[in-house]
Length: 231
View (cartoon, rainbow, N blue to C red):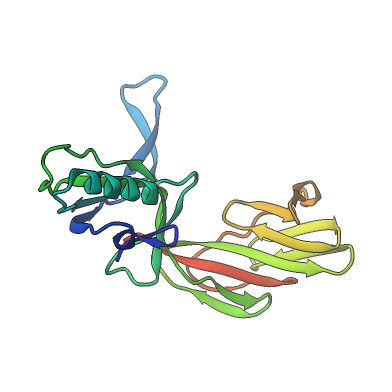
């Protein structure tokens, strides 16, 4: 079954899946012009987007019924923001993707088998469907083949200073008010409720970097993460 945004494609229309193609992550080189000599200086390779192409058939000879099925598939695929896309043979893994290509059906060839949907994942990694967690100060292990999505959550009963460290980088937030705090280590943002508290981020502080392997993050609250894979 193919699920997008929590709904199965096969539940909205009697599609016959012909193929699913998951592209590799596009590697985009970052380089700059040399001021004097010929050529460019390579800086690094940047991991870009990936696409998922789903080709299918709708074996329906009644043209009006077939049109309603096409409309149902189109409605299933559309979303305002990237949403979870779950594919066969990748259990407990999801892409966050958005539809960038819709079927282009023939009004005559009901037997055609090259109808296609294209999804683009601007964040190209597969992430675990289950978010794992560990209390701050406890050792934990992050598996996968790419840096995870990671955040820290805490609930403060009164205004307090918050300090977090992984023994390499330390984050200090001073004078944080009471309420629910979320520090997104992937996006490097912090909010109290829905209001940013980055103005309370210490001048010499450095964000803890999500990484693979064993980690211990000291501080107040809970570390939450989704493991990531390149394929």
